[in-house]
Length: 410
Ligand code: PLP
Image 1 (cartoon, rainbow, N blue to C red):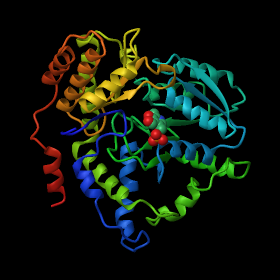
Image 2: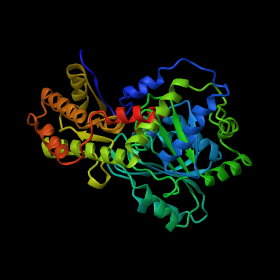
Image 3: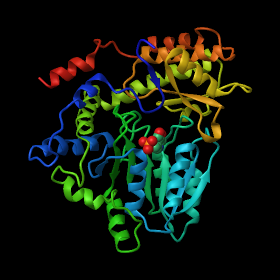
Image 4: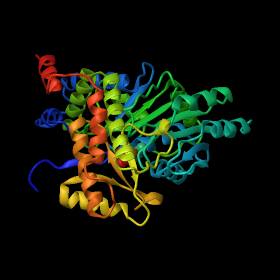
C-alpha cells in the first residue's frame, strides 16, 4: 500500500528518522579505547530519564521482559515472598515470570480496567508483621488495559506500614512518556524497554536499581539467590564502569539510544509528558465524546497517557476492527489481550507522535469501526479530538526537533 503505514500499537512505536539515521553506522570494535566515549554518557543520561542520581542503570540486550527477570533474579532468593497486583496482561506476565522463578507471589487481583488499590496493598503489608514480603511488584502503566497507577501512593502505603519491602516498578510503557520519579518515590528497581517512549526498535531492556536493591543483591548472594548468568548485575558492573559490556553489545542500538536521549532532552522531559497528556486527551475525547464509547479504564484519574483501550459494543469482535484497519487503511491498532481479547482495541499514543498523526489514527479507527458495523457518526472522533488539539499546545516551528538537533550537533 502506498504512503506511510500508521503504527499505532502501544509499542513498538515509530522510530524517528533522526534515530534511524543515527543507527545507520558501520560496525566498530566494542573494545576499542574510543568506545566508552559513546557508552559512559548513556548511563548518566538514562539516570536523568529515570529521575535518579543514586540509581544504577543497566542496559541489557533484551526486551523489557529480560529486565523484569534481571531485577528479580539479582535481588531475591528462591522461595522469597513478593506481593504483586494483577490488573492486565503485563502485570499477569510479570507475576508468571516471578512464579516460574520459584518466588512465592501473593497476587492481589483487580478488575482489568482498574488500577491497583494502594489501600489493599497497605492492608497486605500491614498484615505481614514478620516482614516476609521481600518486594512489591507494580506495573506503572498496564498497557493491556490503558490504566496508569499512582506509584507515589504505593510508596506512601509502604512507608505508612513501616514495611522494608523493596519496591519494583515496571515502567515499560511509561518511562520516557509519563512522569516517573525513581528517587522521589524511592523505587528500588525500575524496568523499561527501548521500543516505547525511547522511540527505538525493541532490543534493549533497561533496569535501574537503588542502593537498597544493591544491598539486597549482596545479601541474597550470601544465601540462595535466584539463578542468572546473562542477566547478572555484577558481571555488567565489572565492565560497565569502564564503558564496556560483558558481551558484544548492539552498536546501532547504542547509537540509537544516544540520539533518543538527545531528542528527549531537547524537547524536555516535562514537555514530553505534557505532549503525551495532550495527545491522550484528544484520543479520550474522540472515544468518549465523539464515538460515545467507553474506555476499559473507567476512572478518569487512571486513564493512561500512552495507550487507550477502547471497548467495542456487545456483539462486535474488536479483532475485526483491527483487521479492517490494518488491511484497508494501513493502520495498526493494538489487540485486546487474554481476558479482554475481542472486547477492545487499543490505540497507542506514545513516542514520536503529534496531533495530526493521532487524528490519522482516530480517523482510521473510526472508518474501520463503521466498516464492521459499529455505529459511530462519521468524523465524530476526529472532530472531538481536533477541538482538544486546537485549544491546547504551543506554537512551534515545524520540525523543531530536527533543527534543534542540527544546532546541538553544530
Ligand atoms: N511491561 C509492559 C507494561 C509492557 O507493555 C510490555 C510489553 O508491551 C512488557 C512489560 C514486556 O516487554 P517486552 O515485550 O519488551 O519484553
